[in-house]
Image (cartoon, rainbow, N blue to C red):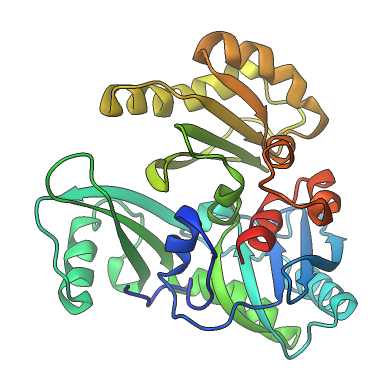
Length: 324
């Protein structure tokens, strides 16, 4: 697999996310993970048996992190550095290799179909840069890019490609380095959280984080669609009608393209308001709608040791613990 994107090092154990992580070089998985979000910095330490040893959380002042694929993200470096150092200290992670989970808007993800695709990364990467040149709001020459093959719907090959702007990835790596951490894996929180979704049948992840919404559809280890958009309101004031308006195009695309409907929608980031969304979404989408963390526990996709993370909706860290 090609691996010159920030998703550099580490191994997931199974499923789609394992293959996503194989964009990176195959080395031992870190025992520490750090998630930087607009509202907080959180971290987890896992044991050699992949269970949670400890976790730590530090809130951030409003506006400290402004997630973007294009512009600088760290608006208050001192505040974020202090939070990262505090979390690292509580976990005993200084000088250790860490997985670094960044806000979803930082990483652009595309699923594309090719009649033919080069086997050599030396040929594949220039082709992807050219193909995606008009799809990203920055120069492809300053882009970190990774890709993986997956089973196609028809003849040819499907390629999942992740893109990020180098200078933005470096912002997050610099925060870790300032706390004397060694950033290894760098990927979005949503890509880590996908491992919690039961994809034995077509399933959607709808993840709200701040003013961003990540929508992904997975089925039998295949990423069928991925979209990250801006929301007009955060989780505290978002309405079911607005969320439905945002996720319906992806559901319709899947049904038209794959010839079947969704079997489930997994909601994340809505906190105690999740119950307000279940009924309206089930009525319109005609499938089961549930909280991601609750579903992961009921299906045995999350261990009891991750329950403290679930209570705080740290689904990215949960996914990392389960698959990292």
